[in-house]
Image (cartoon, rainbow, N blue to C red; front, side):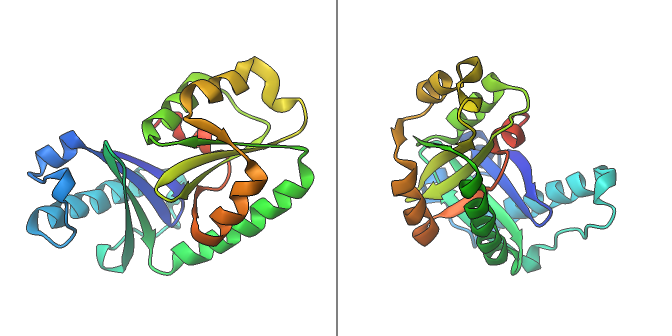
Length: 202
């Protein structure tokens, strides 16, 4: 089980086959409203609250209450991604995120996007690249597939073989301007800025 803070009111949890084995749940036949899944989701909330209580910067942040949380489950072939949000926060964040990224697009000359079918490939890319980036990189979900979008000045993304690494770890390069309107319409922003930095220690 991997849990990562995305915003103060949103966390992403990655559940693997070993996690489902531990709780006695069949990943392929997973259902939310069962006794086993209730224990699993209680543990997810408890782990999130442990993260909140252990971080001194979270002093003003309320703990998550399972009854007031929204759980969005996104299945992949080898894992289940669960996005946990405080009730009402999810839609507001998504709208705010698109507005913020629209403003970024106006400022940057270079826009590229790659598709990933596997979240682990994105995480492995983040670990290989390392370091802080001067460009904006965002993670999107569209039709059950992940998209990593890059907004950068002309020469920022060509340093340290970054483009080659993107090509190695992704499934294919896609047209940024073609995909963004579709993601706006029917997709979702998972991490609006600094996605690779956030995933490096996942």
